[in-house]
Amino acid sequence: MSSIHFEINDHIGFITLNRPDKLNSFNREMALLMQDALDLCKDKKVRCVYITGEGKAFSAGQDLTEVVDPKGPGMKKILSEHYNPIILRIRRLEKPVIAAVNGVAAGAGANIALCCDVVVASEAASFLQAFSKIGLIPDSSGTYFLPRLIGWQKASSLMMLGEKVPAADAEKMGMIYKVFSSDSFAEESKKIAITLAQMPTKGLFYTKHALNSSFVNSLAEQLELEDDYQQKAAKTDDYEEGVKAFLEKRQPKFNGE
Ligand code: T3D
Image (cartoon, rainbow, N blue to C red; front, side, top):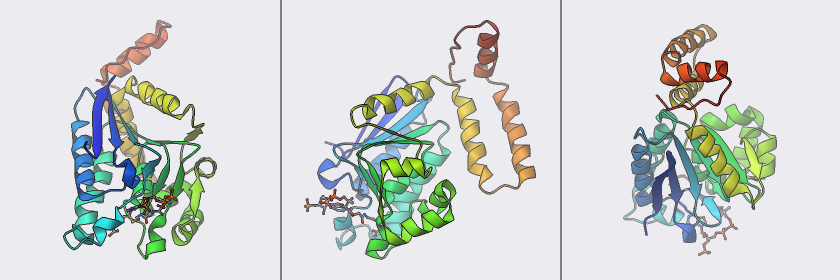
């Protein structure tokens, strides 16, 4: 049994965190295998990525037994070789990445979910910036994305107090996109993946990268970038098909090119 399960179905790369007896907490093996799985998602036949957890948790973040293991990787490697490369792979991937948060998401587990393009959760899920409770700071891009998602004050308070946020509250405060009932979660979250995998993949990629840059660009720079990406989007097969299908009053059939 591998700590990451990976398969491609219907143009979707399914990545399942698979250490359920450890609440899918990350050890070195799982972090490196997740990077490999994200690399496999660069393949053209993958048009959307779906990340979830096996069992009752999404992920409890860093496996804390590994950090006290004298033969373990140590703090420096844990960030520079495990989490940071995962976050950068997700943000740079030229297709949408969905986090389907099935249960508790804590520490790095929460922040990996929150850096994804679409974050949905089961009503059984919760989000926890667990770091302050053990004397650490929020990593895995938490200090970057969380204040941008929910505002500085809420982010700062959640990071310092380390309170667990139920999925329904996370949705209300704009931390995540949608919550589904436990019964419908698997089906509804996969429906989103299927929809995205059939959409104009390059257009979605340009949208993702424009959003990445909007955090740092001036208005003038961002307008220039939108212009540049729009010229590129307008040269895709999918743009041609989208306009043609609209004028012919039929459903478009996008090929992702
Ligand atoms: O050096 C570094 O650490 C750098 C890296 C930083 C990145 C990080 O992610 S730091 C944050 C690490 N994560 C945490 O601090 C979360 C710790 N876990 C919890 O707070 C709770 O377990 C949860 C809120 C996630 C879930 O609570 P609950 O009540 O549903 O489950 P539980 O009973 O606490 O846990 C079940 C078992 O999983 C338990 O083991 P046992 O008693 O059944 O043998 C527990 O010890 C284990 N477990 C949970 N989280 C972790 C873990 N074991 C190792 N590492 C964990 N992170």
